[in-house]
Amino acid sequence: MTRPQSRPSARLLVIDPGGRVLLFRFVYRDGPRAGFSFWATPGGALEPGESFQAAARRELFEETGLDLAIGPQVHARTNRFDLPDGMPVVAEERFFLVRVAEKRIAGNNPDAREREMIADRRWWSAAMLSRTAETIFPEELAELMPRLLAQYSPSLMPGS
Image (cartoon, rainbow, N blue to C red):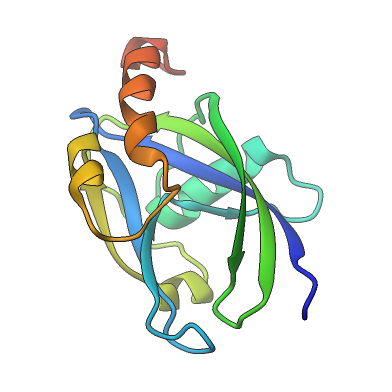
């Protein structure tokens, strides 16, 4: 049995003016989990020496083309999963809130692995998250959304 790798990760809860969160659909195309798909927030692993906040800003730009101030950390969790190659990881995930003025994103800067895995993107309301049968990560996102929207109004965000 392979010992899980540690993977500190910065994740982004990108919220549009309508209170919807941006999720990407990831598909494992090869390896032991080929065909597995799920929806998840933008974000990814920290680079050596990088802070969670700095990784969040870098990932936001890489995956959406947006160069914006990162809001507060609003959630954290430890998540165990397998990478497409089957390597088990334990991810220390910290989630940062980002409010955007419009839904348009570029998403033209992902790395080669992200280009291969990201199959779609969609803005989701809390109601849509609650009703879907699709796999969503983090699993608790539908329950988090109403609290985040109430607690972090646009006027409380950086740059407002």
